[in-house]
Length: 182
Image 1 (cartoon, rainbow, N blue to C red):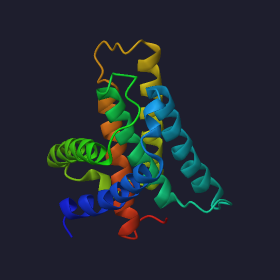
Image 2: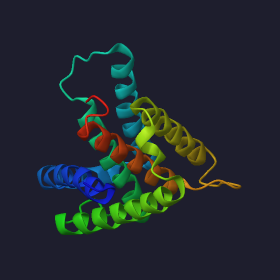
Image 3: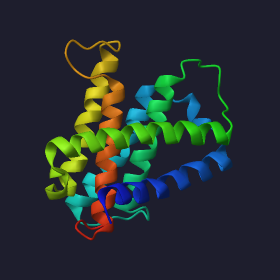
Image 4: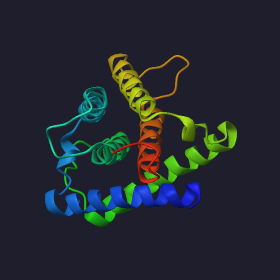
């Protein structure tokens, strides 16, 4: 499979989970502020790191499912950045699907542009590095929030969420290829 196909396959399973959970729970995540979304991603990345370091786990969700959760929370973060009306709590599933597809399309286009320039260097990276990069991006988001959303020369919160999504996809692809354990 090509990188395009692998990307789409990794995202398809995440999107399926996201939309099924939306049907089950509605858009209860609409109450999350950006800091809460960042903390959810932090928890999942920190759990992966702990599993990597200990070499074992006691809870059923594996590294694969945690990367899927990270990707989906990245999408939530991007949607929350766009919907500034705090009063809108419930979104129809069709609207959520459209927003999900829009955000993932942007993430994929970013990945394609970066792959052009970096030559798919991510394929030679460790799963540990993806997790460390995700954690660093979360710390950046938290600092931008502490700075009231202002940056001097750095990218904004949205760029960090896009990078997090793509690191999660890379982790999923390499697990699927058997390069990294799940």
